[in-house]
Length: 542
Image 1 (tube, rainbow, N blue to C red):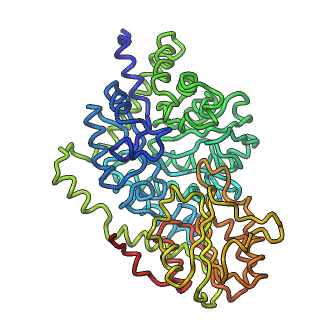
Image 2: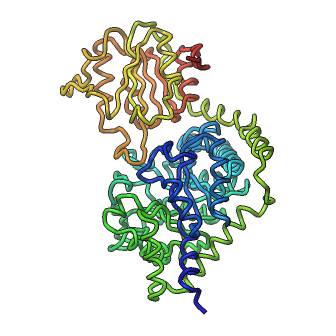
Image 3: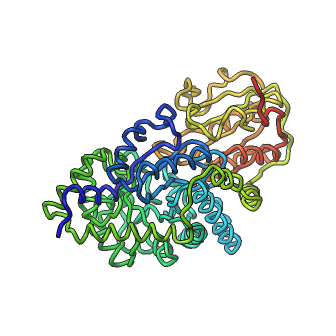
């Protein structure tokens, strides 16, 4: 007997995952375009929506927020976050670790050590996520980043080679799931070899089936063999697998390849359906129905949750989606919830419980892991001293307005300032620093006098559209050297930019690279360049 329409709609709602802020107040939302208001979020949860993806706020706020969401829903929820680089990447106060690609590079030298560190990385991420109320970590990235121009995967990947990506992603997910949370292998069937960001457009992967089986698929096969609980789809066009529809909406990819050929029996979740690769071509209802029909169990961030539910309900009632297919997804969701809660006793969220969990959020072993990763991944060049100012501390970053890696007390700002270097920031909103001359691209007359400490925060990021490779930094370095003004170089993030710049440097010039961009990475790197901690790094009152 079929459930009544209200019960059917509630069942379908349980398979939606919507976006919310980790902050508790609507006015604190960092991305109001995608993050629902509290009123919208509460209404959807009361209607049965079964998951929320969260971003922003402190660790303490996240824990309280998760309790609030459970209170509104009155049912078990899947609460997740993109914490590929540790929980502190998104929620201040938890551990923010170097990007995974740092371990991919170590794997080529010392595989056993790299795999051990990757498992500890996963344990750290999973344990802290669980303590703060999350039960689903949207990682590891299983894409092989074999295209240095990839604008969105880049340092998020665990490797540039199949062996590194396979071994390290599997080690991470084993550690993560051992802590009682779900992991998620993404972005199936492989987003590593693209030069297009699927947040902005639909990438095309032209490779044939033989190449996909040799490069793109093995890390996912390894993750499945390691017992990964969920797999996230990629918004990619792969004509060799489906000439008509992107992978997220493709039955040959999700059911034929992932389910039948690779034998995956866990949860399949779409990547966010608000991304332009999907939303530019499909409405919210159509995208949700096509994704579910293709084989997805969970619909992540539909452009309009109510429209997605309307479309799914009509599809079930019309027979386009069978009741058996719906039941299979409901059962997979229940099995996943049981898996991530199996070693946890239900608890009342008393104040003492909250305080006890927060007091043990970051253990000494996890602090040591973060420090070890920073030291292991640091690369140095030159042995000359960094000159004293007055001079210019020229910092390039994506945006000054939303930059957790560069708060007011960031070492990249304070340490050069204490040595007499005045900061000048370049981002997408700043007046153009470029002269128009390809041989001397930087307009030096706009900077000020004296030696220049060049600090470049460059990496692939969603919505960025590039990994910084289009900017003329090699020419800038040569220009500053010719003018005898380059005092030192620090590159944070992309190893590919560092590889392009390092051969240009004279042997004595002090320079260093860290894959991390967070303040802790800045402190370690600048210490090696001779810039010690500033007194103001501890903060001050006004």
